Amino acid sequence: MAIEEHGASAGNFTTGQTTSTETEQFENTLRPKTFDDYIGQADVKRNLKVFVQAAKKREETLEHTVFYGPPGLGKTTLSMILAHEMNSQLRITSGPALEKPGDLAAILTNLKEGEFLFIDEIHRLRMPVEEILYSAMEDFAIDLVVGKGPSARTMRLDIPKFTLIGATTRFSMLAGPLRDRFGHVEKLRFYEAPEIQEILTRSAKILDIEIETSAAEKLSYCARRTPRIANRLLRRMRDFAEIQHEGVITDTVVEQGLKSLSIDEKGLDYSDQDYLKNLCEKFGGGPVGLSTMAAAMGEEENTIEEVIEPFLIMEGFIQKTPRGRIVTDLAWSHLGLKSPVTQNQNGGQTIML
Image 1: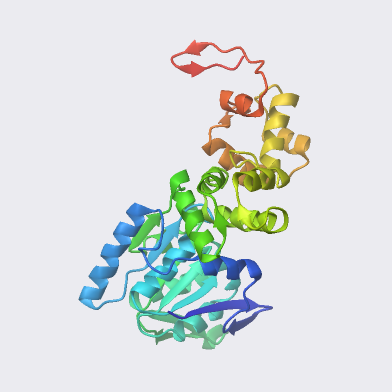
Image 2: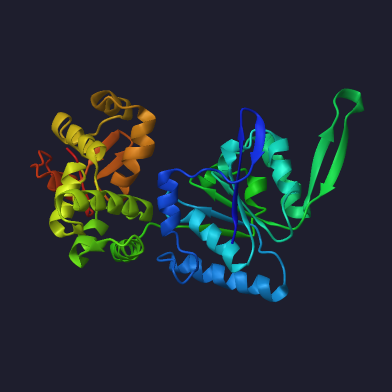
């Protein structure tokens, strides 16, 4: 399967193979090529296998598909697998790279029958660009306005039948008309620790890294249930192992490596730990407003709300209430601090006094 990337720069549309960064090359090396090699997302894989087999049996193109969920869970990888399973080519671009309708039109008119177009962060498409997709997805044609003023006219161009795959971290931001045109909508969930451990073991084998089973298990609990983070940590542990521990990733390597990176056994990094310590030590566990937390940490409100808090909420360290953020018993216990909160049981709920 060939992969071609497209982008737009300085207002000019460019095509061709882009030079991957070292990180992208590392990730591409570890990407599974088939459903059998792909670990996790069992329900999604099961559905996609059926859709692919049905499309092949009818000799049709696969219906347009959108993957949504937090970053790093495998949306791009699944798109590559779909194109591979359909024996087709995958062309890659992103929402922010398509600045003008002509950028998208250039890609669509150069597609071949049955090819896949992958648009990452599709929710960030500009409205004039997005409107080009409506007729392209339904009628496999694009409507272009030629000329300006009274002499302007609409021209319709037929394009080959293709499959659009969209990936987004914010499904709710997709416009209704675009969202309704996708035949398959798949949500990717966070991974469990055993799945992350299996991914780490597979990645270590591909990279020819020796890692102990117990070390892989310990590392799996620090990866925030995300394969991309797991592989990134594996890469860092490889560095520590090669320089300080004769190349083998052991429990000691993981413990010392995570300590050097300021990552604890729950996967909380320095920012997460700083957030919890501020909330506990300065404000007695809350409730505290977002602007107050931002000032106390010296962080932007958006960074706290969109980067730091989601994982802490998901893991049960904090709660959002109408009065502000409060920590849970789990946070006090994790930090090794004694809670000054008086707990009264009322219908199974802990009341913060």
